[in-house]
Length: 195
Image 1 (spheres, rainbow, N blue to C red):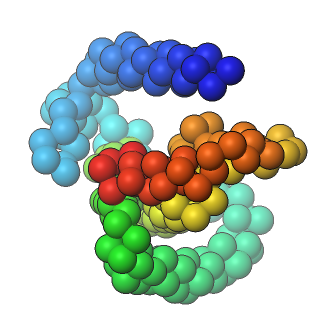
Image 2 (cartoon, rainbow, N blue to C red):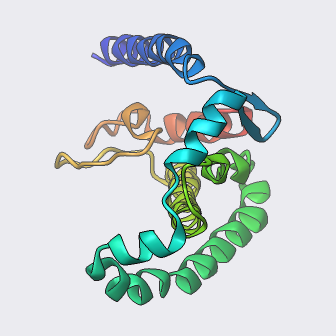
């Protein structure tokens, strides 16, 4: 059974790679290039984007009032997010070397590239930056927690759960106690090697 699951997981990884290759030409047709961390559009596209941008005052008048009313609640989460970022980063920095776990590269998860979109006004870019930060932080934290779980308790749940992390499918089946300690050690070793 485990061999079949491993085959399916390998097929899924291959399909994800194939999908990524298929999407790349479509992205290339969007007339942008990535130079380092900078996204650059062709001049004609950049000019067309600028013409589509909604000016601040027009945006303010046309904007949905409920969004303006709830803004303080949304942006009130900035401080807790920053604290969470600090705590999880310090945890990883202090504990992962002790456990022999490769550190999660923060810049792989927190990507801020929507500011290069000329059709967004400065308020929209601010909103996008906030969402990029919040969602990127959650993905970064999820990977740190996934590696922690793989180190301490790589066991699936008895109940089906939604939103599993990247290491979950390779975890041990619930109740499968055969050679648990040896298999747990194999998970731990893999974490230091790039697993």
